[in-house]
Every structure is written in C-alpha cells, then in structure tokens.
Image 1 (spheres, rainbow, N blue to C red):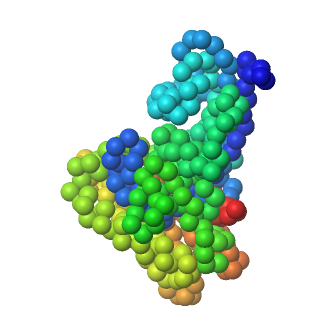
Image 2: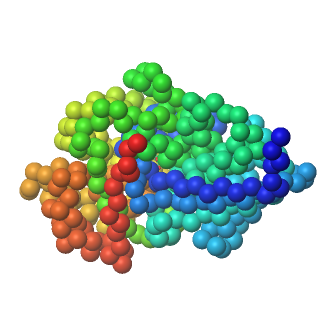
Image 3: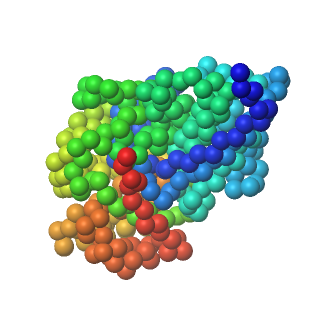
Length: 344
Ligand code: PMV
C-alpha cells in the first residue's frame, strides 16, 4: 500500500458570488428559511493553501490571511472543522495551517466569507482525498457545496460556476437545503455573460454582521411575508433566466435588494447599512435607465456597495455612464469591473 506522507498540501480557489434572490434567515444549522439564486464572479476570488500535518493530538489550527495572522478568523475555522469532522474524519487530529488571499483589495467591503469558506472547503476535501481516495465522484460537487455551507451559507453557491440555486423549492426537483445546484442549463444569452460592476460606496467592515442579521429574522414581524416573496421571486427568476426578459429581471433584482435592506431597517433592533451615496447611486441608475431605455439594474449585498448589472452587449455604453456619473460617488473613486464567471 502507498505510504501517506506526514504532511499533505492542497491549493484551491473559489469565486465570490452575488445573490439575486437573497438568503436572509436560517432554520437549523446553516439551512435557509427560503431558497436563493446567485451567480459566481470572475475576478473576485479567494485562493487558499492548506498544509496538514499528521499528529495523534487534537486538531490545532493556524490561519494566515495575506501572510498575516488573523486570530479573529480562528473561531470560525474551529466551528467549521467541528462541523466537518463527520464528513472529513482527518480533522479530528493533527495540525492545520490555512493560508488565504483574495484577488480583490481587502477592506473594501466586498463580502469574502463565501469565497473564503468555499475555497477552504475545497482544500479540506482535497486533503481528505489524499488520505482516503475512494469517493463517489458523481456526488463530489454536492458534497463540497455542503461542506462550504457549514462554513457560511452563501459559500455553498460559490462551488458552482455561473448560476446556482440553494434551498429546497418545488420548482426544481433536485434542489436541496443542504447544497447548491447548477441551474445554467438553457440560460438566455443576456444572463450568460452578465456584467457586474461593484461600486465601492464605502470601504471597511460592515457595522452589523450577516450572522446577526440572520438571527434577527427569527422573530421578524415580516418573516412569513418575506418567505412568500422569496419563493415567488425564485419561481419567476427561474423562468426569466431562460426567457431573457431583462425588465422582469430588473424588477426582481431591485425588489430583493431593497427588501433585504428593508428587513434590516425593520428588525428589532433596527439598523441600516446603506449610505447616502448608495441611494444617490440607485437614483442615478434609474434615471439613466428611464432616459435611455437600456437594460441596466442593480443589486446590493449586506452592505452599502452597489452591484451594477447589465448584459455584455451594452457594456461600452454603460461603462462610460459608470465612469462619468457613478464613479465620483464611490469612496476614493474605487470600483471593480467584474462579470459572471465561465459557465462550465
Ligand atoms: O452566507 P452568509 O451567512 O454570509 O449570508 C449571506 C447573506 C447575503 O449575502 C446578504 C445574501 C446571500 O444570499 O448571499
């Protein structure tokens, strides 16, 4: 039998993703109160290197982010490895060194939990395969997506290229609360090469974390209404992704973005992550769209930054509008021209 080396290595990368129908609120461990749909990005990624050394002692974890120690991330990794021990038994013992870096500038307020947890889950899986190579590859993607979900809910969608659906819905038989699935089949060209320019309205860490936001949904007065709204939007979006109807797509994007922030503003305690320039930007996008009748819309993550969405076919026209009218509203005029990643 082949001898397993004492130290094993894995290097992986995973993209960030942006949800169009948002996941906001949890049921049991990292399962969503409603299904969500997102697409993965091309440029915004996390790269992770893992070094695992065998030892009979309980697992120790070290973490370096862009070559610097980041102790505040260790509790998250501890929770992750404890949750994953039943899936990846090597995590019971040994020494784990995790080193991650992002392709996008840090502290610009782009959520990196999805890309980082997805790349860590991929790397941990690769270590397990080196120790015990027998694995049913037909379920590999679902399995890794489930591992990623246990780190951060939205991370399970970052395992899929292009468009992903996470959460059980009667609309799609194979859908699951445990992992995300690929929904790229039959996609209209409007959405195959979707552009996403991320406007950095305000840099820095957000004031209230997403895990607090998820918790506040448990007692939220609008919880049931929100679940109905998300399910309706999932059903409609699945049709729109195939028909290519950009007007209806924009309606869902904006309703979902504003609902997410509306839920934050109506939580108890209430809070807002939007900045004055977030609203100014939204108004400018709508005015430009009304004036020129062009397919352009936006979405928001849990923060003040704006994702401007439009098909590749009109990107020249939109990019000049963004540079002239929206860039001055960004902190230090910072923005990232990104797009959906390659659908495989
Ligand atoms: O995966 P979490 O726990 O960071 O939550 C992400 C929630 C949103 O980004 C606001 C929405 C989503 O579906 O990605």
